[in-house]
Image (cartoon, rainbow, N blue to C red; front, side, top):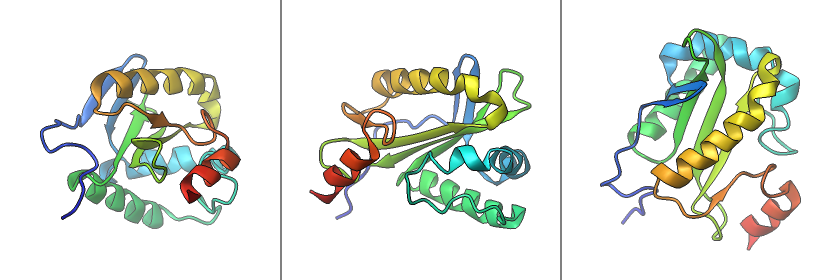
Length: 162
């Protein structure tokens, strides 16, 4: 029997307003604006997913990005993980993304990664705080890990190896 990441009774939001952010499911319809945000922030993104990440590649194509977004949508639909595009208040500029995944550490309920594009770096701390509040107050999680933020990469690797 498969263990579910969130209870079946939990109504996973598909659109969320966390002023000044609008979150929508990360999916193919956002591919072009997501791709532009990713490619304009390559150096910044290299630190988001850990010291050994290979994503994103400087040579990543729009088509590769579309495949990635299709994967995120499938994970969302089957409730294995939840990824959101982050837009500005006007909903015209993709500011970044949020990824809510099952925790690889027994000490946490989920692990969360988020990023904002280079030209919006001043919004990073605001997004992090907004996400922590939203996840704590509206999701069925008690212990939320933000690897590389609330826990060092070294400590995270140790906890995941236990």
